[in-house]
Image (cartoon, rainbow, N blue to C red; front, side):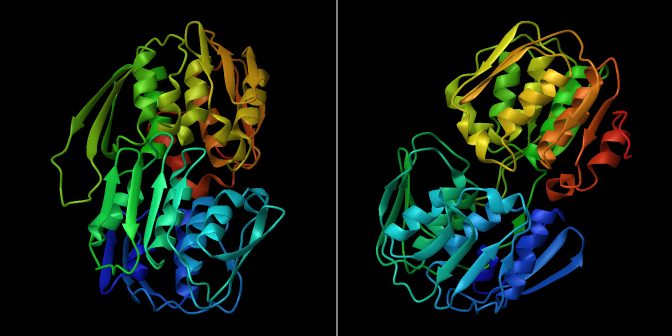
Length: 406
């Protein structure tokens, strides 16, 4: 998206051909951006500049990509033309007002259907920068407002109640945007232009998380995951697992260009875990990794308590409810809370049929749970695994996880 707004050609290496990323490419192409993929993991984006996007002429289908839809709201709010954003059945149920409301405060003309997609954006709005204190830490809301702020009059400032992922800020800086960071706030002034920059995408930490937990449960000889992004605003899972007694070691790589993501090789050894009360400060730093964390908690000694994780109720599924139901099926005593989950760990899990609710992370988490189960686990509705992790099944098999497609 930043490459599309930049002047010049942006080359992205390490591109993941997951459905969310492909939906984003298709939407940008529909907006008049020329994009090449000479290789599966290599993308060249020919930027059109801040004023070069054009009307798509049809609704932009974001598939299952909630992040893309919310960020496109910020991207499209200041454009001269009308736009409409739609998605698959799961995305059409997800809340969008958390982004739409502050964008309206900036002057955007955005309509949702009772707070959900379709999202209709009327062009020609003159946006003005605002200071916005987020009620809940959200990198998606922050990123959408910063994208809108690039074309807004004056200064846009976002204040966070707790740290959230800073990928957007890092990348904006790499594209030549001057940002101001003060305490818990990040701000930029509108009217800045972006310069094309090379982007190297490291291995995705959220994808690595499944194999980190798998190694803790079953890797007698240890497991080494190479070149994983270890941005400190999203590695809360490592801290939570270490508090539980996990043997995890990071071998950091030398830092690269300004704005680049920190990377490391992650070495994991089989460990006996103990239950913990998760510090609330770690929750936003591990929000996408909680499904597989709950699996680790189910196989730990003692009780684990997570609070302050209400954000999990508005993901691709209600992940708190989906995990509680699945763990109950496997014989794990748990209690579903309004904002979290209490789990009493056990030495092994039972088997059974799990409903993934069409959620890729729920499906992959219970695939890893099979490492600690006495009987087979059947996981239903798993097509959306390709959303974030194409090739998960094959890679899991190669690592020794006994999974197969029915």
